[in-house]
Length: 210
Image 1 (tube, rainbow, N blue to C red):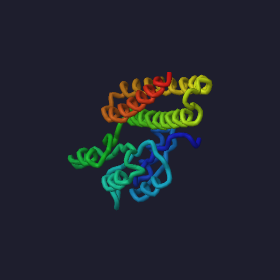
Image 2: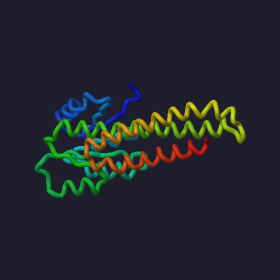
Image 3: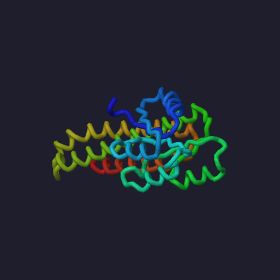
Image 4: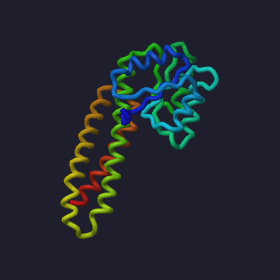
């Protein structure tokens, strides 16, 4: 489906990509493979991704260098990155991962349930961010195009629809909060707080019309 969130899987080993796809197969998302940092950067040029699962150890451009390029680009700097690496990696890898802009760092072999749970919440946040952006845009367009000063008739026709849409967004935010709470993942705090603020501002602007 065209509207499914896309996840970029970056690993130089085919068997690892197959394993990641199998772990994530039960989620409503579309995995996209890249077998090098260069392939990942090319994929990011024309496709929007909800999350990047990025292997640290790759020949040529490693995960840290790839992440640095991603974070330097205006279009991609806000895409969450979860680093993946083997358990015997250098002790400073985790620090370097977070310094490179990763939201999380998992060592292989990792618990498939933990990875699915993390990816699931990030996909939910991504989908909600898109819907919230659409609702905010719709609200601005309707207010600018259909609600001239003193137009109570137009307002009465438009506001019920916007109210239903906004309530649906608020309900979805509550559901995502519950998912984040169950996962107990601190990396979700910042994006969830940003979404909460945006929903609150949208609700305040809507209520001011009443």
